[in-house]
Image (cartoon, rainbow, N blue to C red; front, side):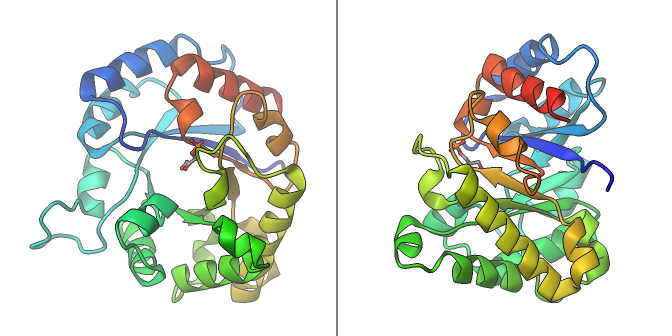
Length: 258
Ligand code: 13P
């Protein structure tokens, strides 16, 4: 089987002004692997305000741009929202949807996530669809059920020929920002279950093509362990992506592992 593409995504969340973002890219550029592997895709997800500046700064670098969220309508009276066509025009190729922080603090539901996935695909952006269970759900033995229903609802009405255009990120809520990442076994179990759910929706072949990333307390020290798992196609990184040196270390491990 051909080697899968690895995606390393840095989600800055609500960090970095435009000038801080420009300084970050400048520093990162000097730290990128000298002969980058074509098997690794590097993606940065800055806040909306820094998207255009980062798009400019990465023009000659092997880095892609993602937004952290989008509205599902193309335009209209939605004060404070940003649409997919706006993101595309700002240089984005990806957009994160359904992050647990959006679900938890901003009322995101599986139904709105589904509309956002549809909007991204309609305009040629790849959605990075986040799913994951809370600690309470895991303790109650509900992890698989939660993952199946989040995925099934988010992908409702999406045809199987879009499998290559979608990225799923498994982010256990309890692992985010906690310094307590999932174990390799927990990640493997969840990734297998997500793939099995995708196969139920779309059939084995299309389900098998869906890239699935791991996210939650990923660091330069543990990234190698996650990327060593065949079912893990990359990582969605929060805290450890904010410092160019740390992020570059993660990228270096990804490049040696691909
Ligand atoms: P941390 O890497 O800080 O745990 O955040 C993970 C995350 O939420 C990325 O989207």
